[in-house]
Image (cartoon, rainbow, N blue to C red):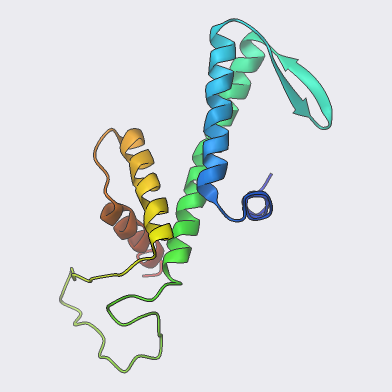
Length: 157
């Protein structure tokens, strides 16, 4: 399984909605945890066959599922960062042929006001909530946007 195949799967099965796919993986993970906690076996499909996993085998599968969930979250963040480039802002839109001067090199931080579609804000809020739980600290929508932009544009420097 490659990153490209996961991206294609999310696009085909979930219409590009990474949050829905992550929710599905989290539900599966919670179900596996419950099954493991009860000492039962889980039936999974492996190359078209049904396989029952118990004990150490189920524990290993759960560990791999956790790694997969982490990778999917990372891919989702990349997709969010890429989609942030495709919306117009109140600070001049996404027009790359702007006649405005480039910012002075000495400045480190800028404040920009951005207008976002409600659907994107809802996704960003969901992602901020998820990141808050993972990082065990408050993560805001602004933090998500800043991280996405930094990861996208600081790599290019």
